[in-house]
Length: 526
Image (cartoon, rainbow, N blue to C red; front, side, top):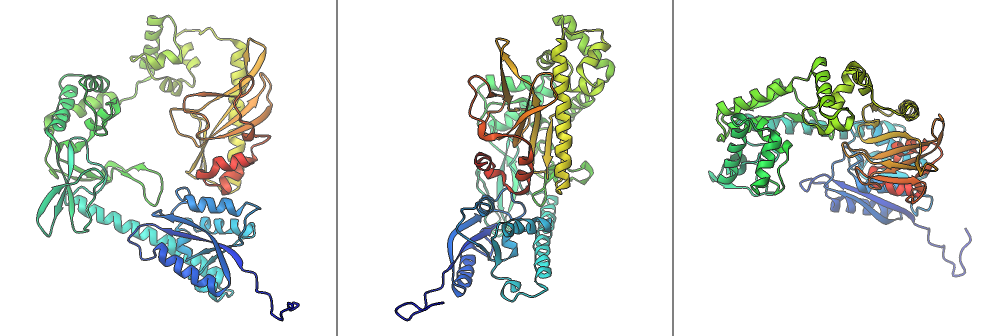
């Protein structure tokens, strides 16, 4: 290096870095302030300039999906115009406590692949690298994951002990009850308002009947269903006609009534662990024999006789209709309307479910043939729809195989045409030919489902009667309102060109490295 005219050596250029900070709760010792201080000391000694912070405050490290800062960091790392080459993190646990340690390594590898190094400033293998450093790093990841598993187990066991003592452990109180705080040291009680929680670990929470108005409504709901023979829809309509609202100050719906009628809490029975979701996994129902049930845990609102009568009536509805009952229901619809269709089965209350009919007979048309009903179908339309169905099945199979080869867990829900990847991302795959304006001008329109949630709609454009794909639209949630149609190509088409692709390799990129919180922006930039 040549000296300057003044005889001084030029100052060395500073490395640019960003820092990633994460803290799960405000009770942790490893606060963001502590992390910033440790990272700043590391950067100062090594002439590193920190140009930006990425912070996930109060967010668990078990998954990537709920961490917007880390999602944004991974997207920025892949940007060729980025202005940094280092990511500084306090330790391995701050990067994440992923239960699959390969996932933690994978996100670090994504940074490395784009020329960005992840540095854990408090780890010994960063200060004194050795051949054992990769082994130590893997061991640290395992320890970070095990800490979460052990903590989850201890918390669950603690909740079980409290539930067995008759206390209300977690969750909202049922309608008609209120949470009451019992202060063990003072021996006093007081009501907890909505969004108010206990602040002392030794205090306990139980349930007591709420205002007399709510208690009276609960009693009427059970009375009308058990002895008045009203159903959930009629009860909800009756309450709304009286101008009454539910616990969220919203109109009553039939499902609200059903939830109340099924809940043993109204007999004073405390029930814990009916459903479970551990370590950020999906919710699932727990077998009834594993529930923690405590009779007389708190005052009852409904007597045993009335509650039993309600459950007996419910039990009569739970048996699915058999084959003969389904056919009888279809014949009843034909006698009443002179025809039968999926739309009529949906809106006629006494008709069987179209889903149940299709599951029993394989298709609605097969069930129609059983009762001797021949719908007036357009043969060309039926042929086109059959081609579309075959195309959807082919796309689902090929896409599933490609994702599985990359190590993803893929499940396919045939009834909704939905692929679920790694229990995180849901794609609905549809293949459609064109509609016609005045029988001449073709256009393609997509509908966003409103009966189930998806993250992307994969729309495959075809021509009528031709088993070839023109192109593919990968549309993220939010671009089309649920239950609404949007024209993709044709007259008055909306601007979806940025979401159009010649193949479906974009799905592999999305599932590999992009968080859902940023996926819309990612697709628009492609």
